[in-house]
Image (tube, rainbow, N blue to C red):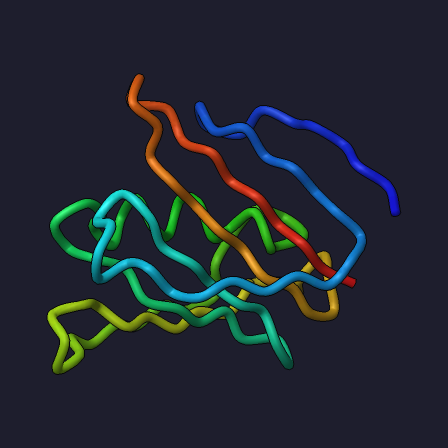
Length: 116
């Protein structure tokens, strides 16, 4: 397993070459959301109390080779969360992965990406 810390738009980004999982706690914690990358599609849910589409797009583009999204869509869920889906403009830098984002007490973000 290799680890590398990088700063990205005010977020601490940790790339981990391993598989990881996490339960979605966005409903209870509006400062948290998760996303997954599978088959070239990035998908997840966020709580609109803590995040908006522009912020989510700026963070999930870390999956993309050139940091550009090719497409993005979202729709509200019955539970009050916002479901989103996206693709990268020129491909993803991982074949699959899982991302967890949490807003910290100081306003910065902790971003963890695990993938292969």
